[in-house]
Length: 121
Length: 296
Image (cartoon, rainbow over all chains, first blue to last red; front, side, top):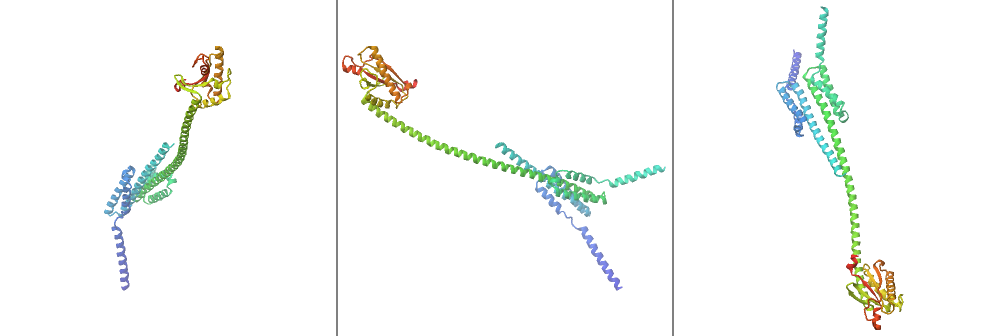
C-alpha cells in the first residue's frame, strides 16, 4: 500500500507537469517579432513606393493578420506556419526595394559617366 | 462483366493515385521559381541565397511526401518560392552594385584624365603667357630703343643740317628743300670728277640725306654761260651723275635719286660778272617734300 501510494503520487506529479507543459504550449503567445520587424524594415526602405515590393509588403501584412486570427482561434501551429509566409514576404519586399534603389543609382552612375565623356571628349 | 469491373477498378486506382500525387499550386510555383532562379543570374551572383532556396524547396518537397495537402506543405512551398525570388533579387542587387562600382571607377578614371589634361594645358598656357610677357617686354625694350635711336637720328640730322648750312646754301622752296653746292668747290674747271675736298662736303650732305632715305632726291647740274649750250648741257649732266653716284655709294637708295643736267638755262646770278658766273656754276640737291614722296 505504501509502495502503491508512492507510485501513484509520482504518476500524478508527472501527469500534472505534462499537463502544465502542454497547456503552456497551447497558450503561449504568438511570436510575431520577426514578422513585424520585417514589415517595419520594408516600410523603412520605402517598399510602399516600389510597385513589386509594395505588393509583397501588403501580402506580409495580410498574412500577419491571418496568423493572429488563427492564433486567436487556438490554431497555434497553423498560425506559426502562416507567420513564415509573412516573414518571407516582408524579407522579399525589403530586397525588391533595395534592388530598385540600386538600379536607380546604377543608372545615375552610368549617366554621369556618359555625360562626363560627352562634355570632355 | 469482369472486364468492366476491372476497368472501373483501374480507373478508380488511377484517380486515387493521381489525386494523391497532385502537388498544391504553391509547390508548383516554388518549383518553377527555383528552376528559373537556378538557371538565371542567381546561380552566379547569389549562390548562398540560391542554396537557401533549395533547402526551403527540399523541405517543402519532404512535407509534400508526408502530408501532400497540408497547410504546412503549402506554407513551406510558399516560403520556398519567396526564397527563390529573394535569390533572384539579391543577384540583381549584386549586379547593379557591380555596375555602379564599374561606372564610378570609370568616372574617377575619366576625371583623373581630365585633371591631368587640365594641368598640362595650364602649364602650357602659363609657359605661353610667360613667353608672351617676355617677348612683350622685349618689344617694349625694342620700341624704347627705336625711339631713342630715332631721337638720336633726328638730333644728328639737325646737327648735320646746321653743319651743312655752313657749307652750302639751304633754302625751302615750293619744290622742296634745296641744297645748293658751289660747282667750283666740287669740280675742277671743265671736269666732272669730284675734287678731294668735295668728298668731305658731300659726306656731310649725305649724312643729312640718309636720315630720310625714303625721300626722293633730284640732283640738278647747272653751268654758267661760257661755252656752247650743248657742251654746258652735257657737262652739267655728267656732274649731276657724279654727285648721284657718290650719294648712292654712300648708301642712298638708287631708285630714289635722279640726276638732271640743265646747262646754263637756269642762272641764279648775272653771267656778266665773275661772281655771278661762279654762283651759276652749281649743283642743286632738291629733297622732295614728304607728301610728294609718299604719294609716289
